[in-house]
Length: 140
Length: 482
Image (tube, rainbow over all chains, first blue to last red; front, side):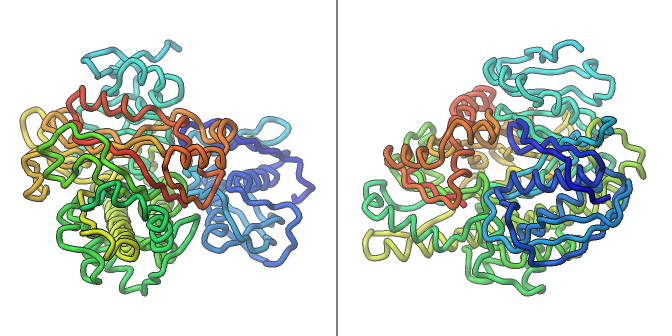
């Protein structure tokens, strides 16, 4: 469930806002890739950060896309309001409608780009055989 | 699938009829010239406009202004009116930055008078108007004060001695919209809003000191206190983290509502609920509260600007006072009365990246603007120019009293970061005599003028179509960004 990451993310073109294509061999890997991609868009560096803060998160949504929006929204909020970035993300539960995670992170000093919100625009998590992919549009 | 090619139905008007797609409820209209139409066809703007035309209960047509560009759900530059109470309200039709808008402040100063003090003035404004991602300000409101901000807007600032009565009169809706209910705003949104009143934020938000470069309508300009070579100040920002949270909360809540009310939408970001439903009423009350927060935010920033002008210019110029020209929202849903088929109807007008542009004689305008129409503020891209326009009767007839809100992006932020370097851009602006103070250099690159459409072309379309008239063109002399 929390295997070493085999996920990816890449920023893709969007005229007004920011968009990310991400994927992973499992739903957990996809959610982690999406988080790291969003941190990348925000200009937050996650490599080499020493662990400092433990945090747990529980979320519920209508469906898995809603869960991804809530997950990223919560991380963006923690970064902006709490000044925290999570370098380690372990999922205890990740179903189509529920997420439970243990997170380890540390304080950050600076965010380059503000994510106002994570949108549902054309959001669809697709099972592509070898794993899952999604495209997420962020309001900035 | 056939190419989406809107038909030209007027000199600056293009239409996509309802038979283009089976789920369209009304036609989709775009205000454009051929160049703008071509740009709109290059991304997903038109597809998003067609999607918007699928909302239940729309009146007449879904509209896009000439600064249209691809957003999420609605296109940016979108206007959609729904019938009250049976139509829907859509948080995606307002956007996450509720009541993002522009305020224009006038001064009694000439450009050459200010020039020697410009650097000090920029430093003072930067100090008095906190900016940057997640940055709080000097005010930390207790729950009671925050509730008052949400329910009274800029009127709260007046009660704190941070505004004048004239500031409020010269603000859309008097800067204090009725119907706000702080009880509909989540605890998290309240927490995010506690220390951000009087802060600029980041992204494309800015404070700009401008000089009036050209006057097109002397009578209207005089009424607004604008003269050639006079100095003015623009503020562009919104409801900060509180507004973003209100929208996110209701977007999530509305995901259930679309099932409850059996709504079928082409994009989840268009989610909506009937205005008469508990969800719809809750969102309208929360959105109105966030809108009031934004009016209070721009008002406290105005106070900061006044402090900066006083600190630097008092005793050095004849009159350093700053007065309000107007403050107008460009991300908002308002309940308004418009004439449709010859009779007045109460509508919920969504403007997402579109500005209210009420014509002469419209209710709510202060006496000095009653016969010229509402001032419309159209900021251009950073370092180029901005426009002051006025609303028209034609806008009332054709666009539910709406017009453009800016230049409109034409290049993604990613492309802009690749093509432009923030440091070089800042140097180029400094070389052309524009002082720049920015918290983020990469953010500066994303806002490069080349990433935006030509605002002059956008303004030519709205002027030509008659949905706003030119009053004055502004050029920047100093830019402050988060």
